[in-house]
Length: 260
Image 1: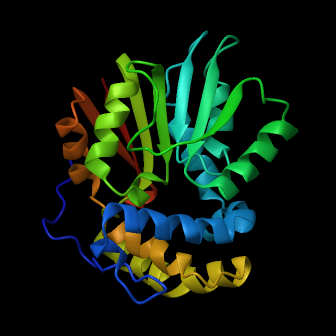
Image 2 (image 1 turned 120 degrees about the horizontal axis):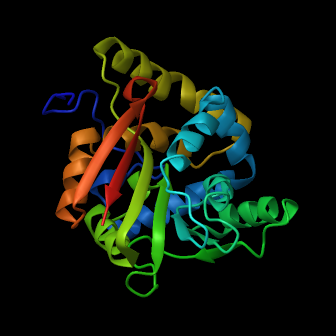
Image 3 (image 1 turned 30 degrees about the horizontal axis):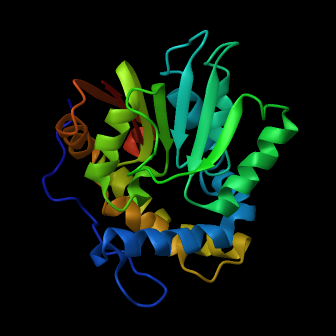
């Protein structure tokens, strides 16, 4: 297993448009700020994802969904579903009698997702619901699979969210988490930091015409997020019995798989 440095390199506080530091806010204040920022960029979110990841986010999402066991009657929930990219891929793994619930706190992002779902004629198989990852509102052991794609680092209380994820999964159920992580090579980490903090905010802001500071927040949120081993430990503490991960693109992204 890769051994990472104890002190994360390049860790920075998350500057908010008001000049406050998001990482020092309470969970609720952080959450509200993040939602305002994502509302501002909802319509350009998919385009920017493709531009800023050089199209790699599609491959990363396919790799994550491939780790979801196929089912004939499966029930899955995708939290932080945003514009429903992962929910649409997940639907194919749930079988003829299956269903996917796509949840997000942000109405503007969910509306974009609903349009994509409707265009594919899948409204009967994918439901969109506004919900908080820390309090999903479903009964215990409701889902076979739970997924999260590039959203967990925006959660106000990460430990509480993992406990809630564990609660709503059936015994033997699987949590698949796709998230930005820590590059495993020093040279790649330096290059990634340069791209993230210098180039990405300029491109993202230009395309989205955003003035909220979301493209300054996004790379900073990655640096304050637990690395691969740190996230694994949090999942184990939440009650998952088996947790593993695989690095993609040199550790820029990692997929964690946890079993209840």
